[in-house]
Image (tube, rainbow, N blue to C red; front, side):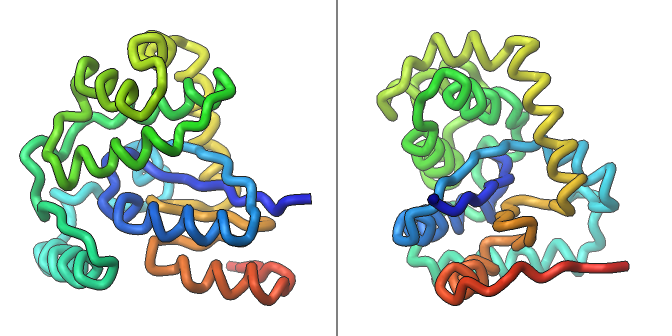
Length: 207
């Protein structure tokens, strides 16, 4: 049976973008099933003690900018540190991922284009027409998924993802969960790979 990794993320997260391709390659090489679980970071931060970027101390904001440049170089990417349409409301793009899942479609091609659209092409992923176009170019029924993304059913799943994240101990994006063990941040992908290769039992945190 394939091992399952629950993938918590937000369309607006630069770190999810930076690690996405590397994570997908890792999961694919180990034959893992990936469960995509978009979460709204504003509400997740409020529940788990995180702060939105604008409210963080200037030292933390400056360090974030250095880290973005470091990881841009490390991952061989070429993206804007401050895209024209960021920050944006990610609920619609996140909702399209959920709607694709519900429809039995693979959302990953959309996610690749979505992240690239925000950080490389400076698209407005808070705009319905733009999201529909990105989904269509990923081979998905964009207009249909946009309509579904705005439905109460998808909103319920979105909220459940947030509750699931809190319950398992995820407090940011991206969060990868393997056998109940949380790996927070794209800079933990290599550690996730170590576990997949070794097959060790999951570590448990305690407070």
